[in-house]
Image (cartoon, rainbow, N blue to C red; front, side, top):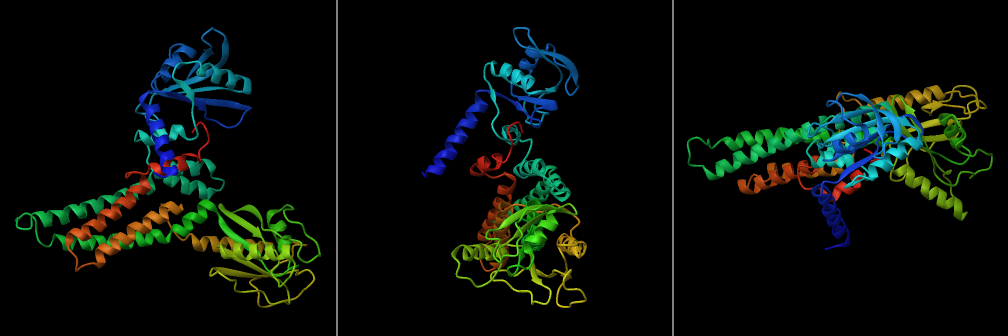
Amino acid sequence: MSKPEILRQSIRIRFNLMLATGETIYALSSGGLPAGVAVVRISGNRAFHAAESLAGAVPMPRQAALKTIRTRNGLIIDRALVLTFPGPASFTGEDCVEIHVHGGKAVVNALLDELSSFENFRLAEHGEFSRRALENGKMDLVEVEGLADLISAETEMQRRLAMEHAAGGLSDLYNRWADRLTRARALIEAELDFADEDDVPGSVSDMVWADMKQLHRELSDHLAGADLGEIIRDGLKVVIAGPPNAGKSSLMNALAKREVAIVTDIAGTTRDVLHVDLNIEGYAVKLYDTAGLRETNEIVEREGIRRALRTVADADLVLSLAEIGEEPQRTFPGFAGKVLTVGTKSDIHPGAHDGYDVLISAVDDAGLIELHELLRQDLQARSGVLSLALPSRLRHRTLLTDSLSAVAAALAFEDRGLDIRAEYLRQAATSLGRITGRVDVEDLLDVIFSEFCIGK
């Protein structure tokens, strides 16, 4: 057994032991301190016992009550709102308590210190509340990932995509597909086992394969949205490229509305890749400034150019800059995406100029509105979908591709036995199940929950 497998197994054993021994967890579940209000969450089979010890009689489930929070020695910690959520009808599926105290550091620390004195109580680890919700069947893996994305969402489209996942929209789709695959396998196996029975028609497989062809089309269409899902979640990667002194860093600063890059008249000033995040029409845009592209023998500049070309190859969109009158570069090694040509320094090159998609000047901001509009149009063209039930992670894309390949194999091998073709459908269902966590995914859990903050 490899070291990573031993580590994963030890983590699984430790987590299962935590559940078996009935450890109750607690943590600050709101934002950083100080704050107007701080929420301390408790989950476990002794959560209500702690609430009664701290606040006296607990309120009715899901009803807030103003209580005086005291230590077990009778010292007052704060006046706070207390809410109770009996399991299994709670976020984690266990008994949960929320205590809403004033958000001062001393108040919160005093409450956490008091909770630490209870037997079998400990501070929650990263994402442990959500992990218990997963273990207790309150959420599946896609919903957990959606919740993590919702917490970190910075733009409107990121929020909408994460909400679709966290609310179960994507999970419902994958579960329906998995159920269709299960039903198809059951019908095939029935035909294999009871071919001589009157109640199992011989043409049942025709019906199965017609549905599997439709499922193949649905999976293909769904996978086509993976690029958009990843762009919404991770941001559209826009790279500014061109020769030295073309105005790349000036454009970067103008779009960011602050000085991100150093701007001089000396060619080769930018040596490394610079990055800034923008929000355009609710979409996250990751803008990169790169070293000027030219032939050079200078070692540091050559390394900067190598990094620039590598960044361009990974881009979703390239802004190819050239001073007006110069020919912009229209193709780049390893990049097959869209290139927008930008003529720069229009303030010193007045008059109409053909051969560019847009003309700009970082000095007087001329053309920046038009460039912003071109970026917006590109984003809208990429997002021509009505639903945001889209795969948004490489994990989703990989498993969906595996499922699609298995369905394609089942459809293609008509000359093979039904038992072999049914096995391909089983593989397809297994891949879908690994997306939602219906099939063993223990090796993924520690990575996923590490994305959460403590208290969620």
